[in-house]
Length: 154
Image (cartoon, rainbow, N blue to C red; front, side):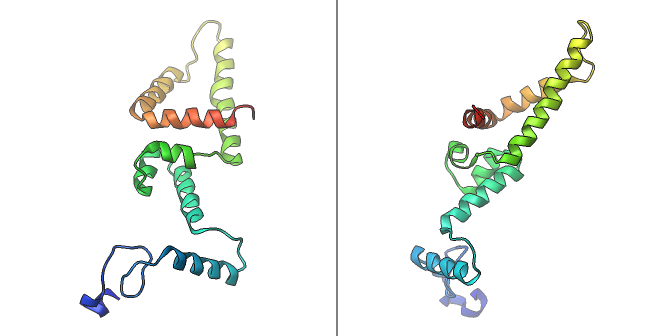
């Protein structure tokens, strides 16, 4: 449309726009989404919930890279990402529990059976690497603390 309308097209750099580039009003987007949902027999959602879903998925796909997701969503504060989108789903929690069991408790048991000798699995190196990662990404610490707070008692 830009090429066809030339100077008659006003580019507001919008994702959704009228044919001449003008932005849609919120009501117009909501109406179109409602019609699309009805036509395709989908469960009702509001437009902003699509943003919430997208951000949550990006957080999962990025492995919890809060700063990357923050930059992508345009939030001014990383805390917005952790407070609004960093909720754990059941599958993530199950996988985390398995990983903790495997990487912590099973290694702990091997270390105890070595009669005073440290485990030779590189656990000191792993711990140092984890500490370095946490120090270089303080938002990840906030994410972990927030996740622990939300899952306590579960």
